[in-house]
Length: 334
Image (cartoon, rainbow, N blue to C red; front, side, top):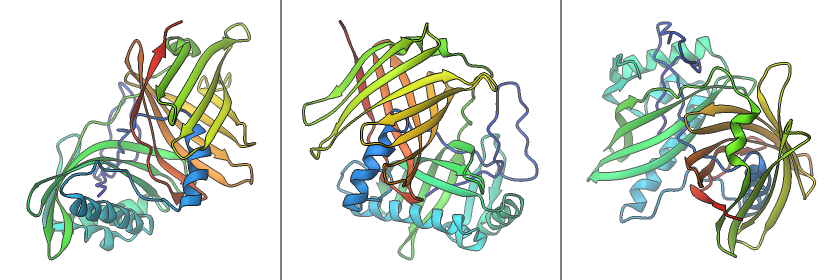
């Protein structure tokens, strides 16, 4: 279930973290991402056919039923939030709940939580959230520890915040409720970026086996003014996808941007933001039939020869798709 701190600003180094009388509304990027737009463009096509629109996958365990209940509660929580229903959202918290935001400020009780949501929905009309539960552990009968992330967007669909969180859930009267939630520090973004920051990606990368595999190749083009990325991917169901991406620097803003073109006729565009030892990519795309896609990605440098990848918050025509699995790509030595 996705807690929310009610300041919807992504903070930059050296920038004061404003309180504005609300719980801060950061949103987690626990998502190591599957490479730019490609994942949504072909995985959404496959999942649309299968009808799989579940939230983040949880590893199988003896507590699968309880974990699935918590995942379903997360989706119901997001649905109530996206309708701007403060009372319904507060009902997912226990009467004596406690929320601790990243600066240590505490809000107690369901009533206090509801007031914060009322204020948020007034200040940010049309705000929406995409939940992504990364893990659920049943620590005792009726008690669970949940870790996850939330991505918040404004009424126009623009990303406005993300944050880490951990939550203790308890089962009361047959329902899983948030008892205590602690928000972790918001990720810090670099103040400036340059295309040379992607130099470490140059080369060939691969993961998987012959049945389920991703291959990426990064290379400089046009006197190192642009970076070209080609890829092929097999999804384990016999579907093969390929495409080409060009990454460059927007001269008007200095941002790193990308354009992706897929062999099936689809295309996408992304905007890159540095995050710790990797990059977050917010992307939008179109499938060959014009269907709109959206996703948030992260590509993370685990070490000199390893990339960690994932995609989350994926949507096709506004319908939520299952998050991709975390996986690693290894550099191919030549």
